Image (cartoon, rainbow, N blue to C red; front, side, top):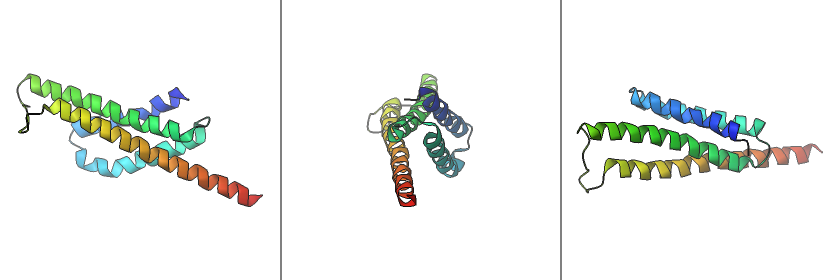
Length: 130
């Protein structure tokens, strides 16, 4: 496992969440595909094998960093009384934790699936060239 690569790619999650907190949330829908394709290309070029596992870990770490920043923001707002319990009596931080876990699983699975697809296509291309 190349942890340096995983943690460097997870910094995309920090940047995306900071953009979200600054009010650039609507533009993130256009940036996430760029981040995912960049991650797939970098993992495909620099990972020492186990591409899907590297992709899953990088995607999960991206979302975990973003979720941690968002949890701190919610905590700060709830501390001063701006965020209260939702109508279903669920605290916003619990909702954030569940959303973060789901987003981490989905983002990691998407990157892993794209890496599996690219490695299979590359293996097929190499076998046809022989």
